[in-house]
Amino acid sequence: MKLVEAELRRIRLPLLAPFRTSFGTEHDRDVLLIRVTTDDGVHGWGECVAGSEPLYSSEYVDAAQQVVRDFLLARLWHLPDISAHRLGPALQAIRGHRMAKAAVEMAVLDAELRSSGISLGDRLGAVRGSVPVGVSVGIGSSIAQLLDTVGGFLAQGYQRIKLKIEPGWDVDVVAAVRERFGDIGLQVDANAAYRLADARHLTELDAFGLILIEQPLPEEDLRGHAALAKQMRTPICLDESIVSAAAAADAIALGACRIVNIKAGRVGGLLEAVRVHDVCAASGVPVWCGGMLETGIGRAANVALAALPNFTLAGDTSASDRYWARDVITEPFALRDGELRVPRGPGLGVDVDADLLAGATTSVERLSGPG
Ligand code: SMG
Ligand code: MG
Image 1 (cartoon, rainbow, N blue to C red):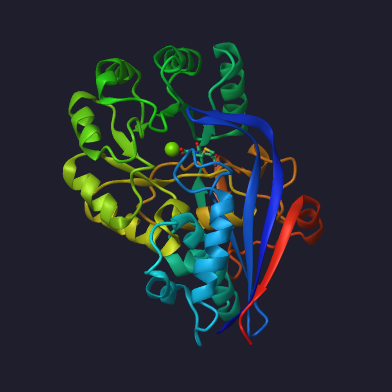
Image 2: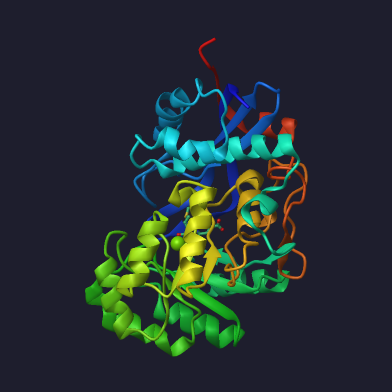
């Protein structure tokens, strides 16, 4: 299988409701989609999870598109036989830019699996036909408004609620949700908004029986997380800090986390995500699948990944209608009894709707290999 064409398409999808975190508010998503074509005429789709600004991590979508075009695809055109497991060695020279690499890998993997008739779930080692899902709830405008939002999601069947927190929107908010909704699965995510000096304040969260606290401290601060873990009863889960399987092994060895959030984009691709899963499984550390407000393309990959055996906690892979009035895939992901079904068709197992895609498109760059 040889790569002959690639289309770098940007789409803009308005979110049904703004999503506020400690680092900013998203009103819509500016998504880079990659469609590769092989010499057999098979297509493969990839989605890049980088945001429009470098706020979650150092990557952002304009840079990702440049990296994909000038540094990643540029190293792949000449390969006589391309497949996902050959990308690592071919792209090793390019440092970082994991979200850009992950998007290319997803597209190549999708094409490869579509041509051999294998589903992504089967390729990665899925052991479940559907996965339990939770929902991530942004910082609200008031506690009353947040309680309404949480109540709506629980009524839809979401199996756990994750509250975004930041200094000034934490203990009181968690207390109010616990009081109103009782013994629901509840966890919080700080997106690195605290410092170790806040440890005493954060221990107040221990009173609420949370499943976990996600990424309280900065990405680089593994030792800080290990020190915080000694003071808190609530398990620490890392998101931003875990950029590879090696980083996961280090964090676990240091005692910086007891749970890991896996996002394929953050670690450079689905194959590395499986390695993170395996490292955690070997250490008895449970994992769950994070979300980056993906369209149905990235969501299909997340749901397949979340079906691996050590994904024992509900993920942030919510249903399409939690985000979009209309997703770009023909069959949006729908919640059934608190779960999403893992696609069974070849590759990602979802079909892109050409009209919906055209309606959302803001630019298209068509590339082809040299001769
Ligand atoms: O996809 O439902 C989703 C969003 C889940 O909270 C979520 N993601 O830090 O885990 C996280 C955030 C990062 C994305 S904010 C744009
Ligand atoms: Mg997070």
